[in-house]
Length: 264
Ligand SMILES: [Zn+2]
Image 1 (cartoon, rainbow, N blue to C red):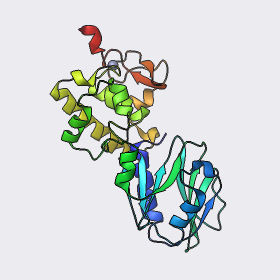
Image 2 (image 1 turned 180 degrees about the vertical axis):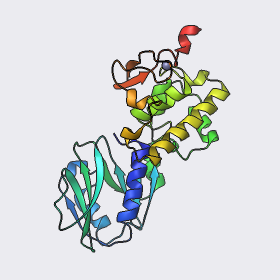
Image 3 (image 1 turned 45 degrees about the horizontal axis):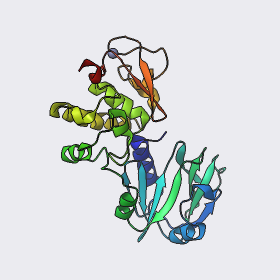
Image 4 (image 1 turned 30 degrees about the vertical axis):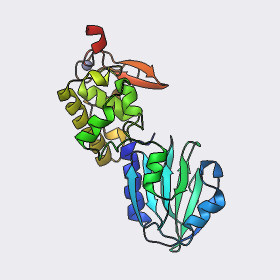
């Protein structure tokens, strides 16, 4: 599922393929992925260009001058740039056709991704109540985002209105590196531990961006390649455990990530 590093990879892909070309047609194969009315969507995009892009959390913003196309990739969203002589990519939901004979397809196996047109990024971020971007936030912003939050660590990292961009996979890695149990309380953490958590968020996301979200290249000392039943901790070799938290499976090492609530 695309998290911040994957969306950053989509951003770079779009930047290198699709900027500054006039869009002559928008083909909507399945309007269930649209959060905007079909006609408004088309009208806002046709005869414009993708001028530039920016990203906030898991959302990609494409500037159309004056409006913005906003892309969210849900569980299985992807982008594919291809020539009009090539076959249309599988699961294409919306296709942007450029004057130069190339197309950009927004594909999604399932329906969870969303495209829409908005007036400004700020309005959208406010409407969605998104917290600061996990990769760009400062330590101050991070500390501010955690203030008065009583959520357990796993939920705090996943909650896009606290911090935007982190999903199930990277949150497991971040907690593993920080040696925090997924159910530990962040409002109990000492300042040093908060700083450590902050640094690990940045490091894990940076690594993901560098690897373009390709999980097959993850080193063995990460927990990500071991997120399976009966796998062992790459540090202490104890069997990993998991908890289902808010409908998502969270893997952790019961030895390296002790539940602080039990030691009180
Ligand atoms: Zn361990």
